[in-house]
Length: 552
Image (cartoon, rainbow, N blue to C red; front, side, top):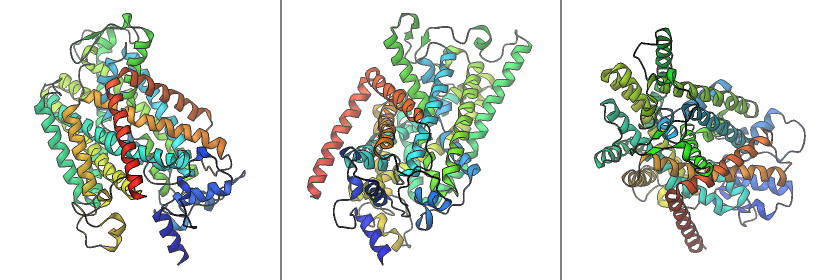
């Protein structure tokens, strides 16, 4: 009975004294003691089983499990090891970005060598961010990505703004980008490139988006089974591109007069400045740019690379299913992320071998373009099919996650309860009632999926691939920056907080410095996207204030 009472109190957001929920007290207002910190964390855990805040010394395995929200009351079975975690992180991070971002990066850098360095920096930044998220994920369990961390560290309003940004901006923009890429890959296989802004392309993208939304509305089981089908295509596609690039390089080295591949890779310097041709036909003359303008271009290029690594923050989600998370989660991160960096560097080097360098900058489907030019339209269509499968898998997974994020925000009271309804359209049973209604034909959050699909359709119709990519990066990395800054603050405010995994301080500091600069310079370089994002935040704050006042 006591356990059930505690669960109800936690679900209702009240502490055991009937007062304001402890986790809503911002860390920045001061935390009196480690005991209070422990109570705050305990109130924030939906799955239960979080242990005391520990001081110095090693914890046993039970302590380790409880520190990540497991133990006997955990929601998940701890059946995964480091190898499984490695595979999960790989499957999440490798998506459409490595096939679509190279053009956006090449447009904004002075040389192919600089483009590869941007991919490397993006990978290292993702690695640093994933390590810091692992620290928070094993110390402050919770659902909804960065939202529980920001809520715990800075207060309820920051958690709300993160949830609001992901629901109305980041996730819909992600779905819009993937839908555009899906259609662009099809057209590229037929030799049509650079026409993504045409209304015909946009309407087809909206139709694809709608189909994915319908697929995710069937049921959770159907979505996950369909998603499993797409995973293997990612590895096959990247491996094929790299192998083709290596073969072409060897053939051209053996016979320099052979007309195969792009040819520029063997004739031009990889780090020498060259004028870049933009998709709109304009030309960027790098020699004439100021240092500030150069940094603006490089920041935009880094956003595109970070889009390619998108999903690194999801590594913390596997911690609840690891048998020894404090050991296995860092091992998974510190092996999977470097492996992904190597894959992306190899694939992009292959693109520069397979294509003339001025072509790379002008296409948003570089992989399909490369295979079509090298092996002909027939195999280009085969490549397009594989790319489309990869993108469809990413679309399905992101649509799946976006609906759940809206449900989590609604369950926090941040968004209307309508969005927490599952199994039907409109008002009806909410997520808390699902376990008592096993007869539901669908357990999908249909209302939330409809919201994300409609918002993504608006972004498709009003935006374009590259503008949306920058918009997405600004939204994500603003809150990634705040989260990592919070992790640094937390080390000084709660030094005795149990941290099963704790990277050296320089790692979150580097991430905070680079991501903070990228956000500021990216906003200055893309003021339209920044203005829209600030407007959405202002709208969100107004909604938060009105809703808080209405709820008393």
